[in-house]
Figure 1 (cartoon, rainbow, N blue to C red):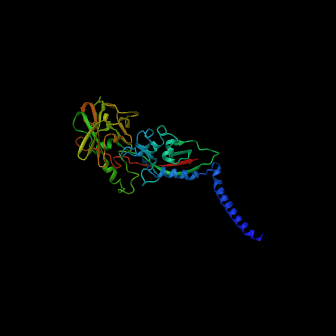
Figure 2: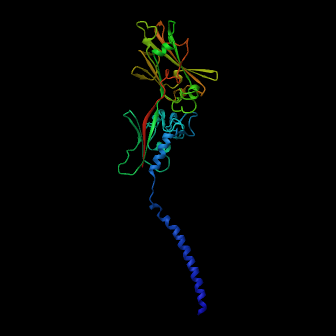
Figure 3: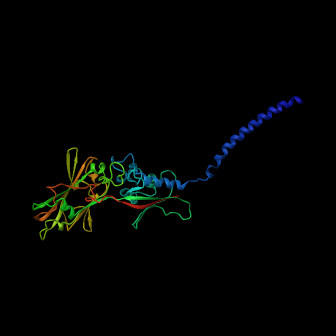
Length: 368
């Protein structure tokens, strides 16, 4: 009987080996049985931080269907063509982290155009998880709080980030008594129609020095781009011109034309050929889309919304834009006119143009 002991030992080893293989196989299968029961934890603070960095430090980007040369904040119908935008970003440029562009801020918080949470999920939050969030911006000195998203929950954990930022405003000019006398913008001829021209040198604005700041470093926050920024032109003090107007004079803007000079080629587009919806005309407190002739009292304002000059044509970075106004008076006399002098330069001279300013603001991002 002693010879059977060896056979029993081999059976035991074979059986034990089979048992261990089966045990290991079962052990590897058990975790899969509880996948649906596992808890899903997300670092909401990390998501809020990432979103805050993207919005405050990135200028944003366009998608595959974007109009060539047009930034995301000026793309039309992004809801209908979502591939026009790839990423929201509010910074003026990558060289200006924490300095937000006013045009981008206005477009970002336009909740009648962008849908919450769908559009903001795609272009600001990212990821497939159905986050809820609230993004707000409060500018110092203003009562209005801009925000998009849900109300932040009281009894539910959420991620949060607060960023101190600055908002860069646009530029504007007021052509009044001082400038009229300094540049001799009064025609000595007594006629009914007077031409006044304003020059916007795109090449100079984009590449020359910005005031006392030497190009190209350190000036991105203060540089304005006529194809992207809002431009406001005020013309006032008609009653203070060197030659007083004759009694009973009525005056109007009878026409506004836009002249571009590219590679020695010239084009002259009348107002109906461009987008009037981005051009507002003001006489005192009255604001309207321009309809000429436009009778005015003592001053006028023209507001060219961001992207307006893109509607004129293919304006290059080395181009020059001329805004030509025709003033008509009912009696022959001297009037605002620079036909025999030079166009008014819209440039970085603070005497001519009020330069962009930086306003303090606080941006808050909450994600849950």
